[in-house]
Length: 210
Figure 1 (cartoon, rainbow, N blue to C red):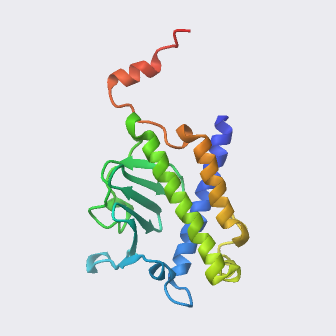
Figure 2 (figure 1 turned 60 degrees about the horizontal axis):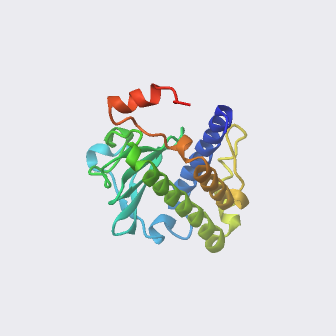
Figure 3 (figure 1 turned 90 degrees about the vertical axis):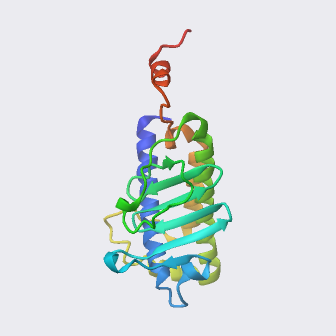
């Protein structure tokens, strides 16, 4: 896979996630009631001193795994792996060994420090990312089945202003499946490792023996 392909795919993924964040924001105001809450999310309103921030929505996928949605990105944490944060406009998944956010992320300043994972955690992080992408695909499939494609089309009317990537409602779920397949096929380009020591750096700089 060429560097140009990597940049192109990441740009497309960032556009897809940005549109999805818009959709989640619209789903909060669904005419049938807050769709996030109806799907098991817990809403936490900002404290008085953070009234300029929006609410934090958290979904417990299981007792050991949770997703947090924000306007500036999405977080997934698993107790056996740690946590990943994928920022909305760049789509560069970053890792932290903590599997739960101690402070609700009212803004990105509340997030802990994230970085590329160590070598031993790389494919665990890929697995965690794929779990998130599959959940989003399932979420959009459920929207289409339960609320209807007409609802999703309506939520995207304002988004489709001709100036940013637009994925039609009919293609949203399949686009997330396509991204999952792309990540699975080129995992190391989506989640590169962080050198754990100076010796790792030296190993990377040394030419092959052959």
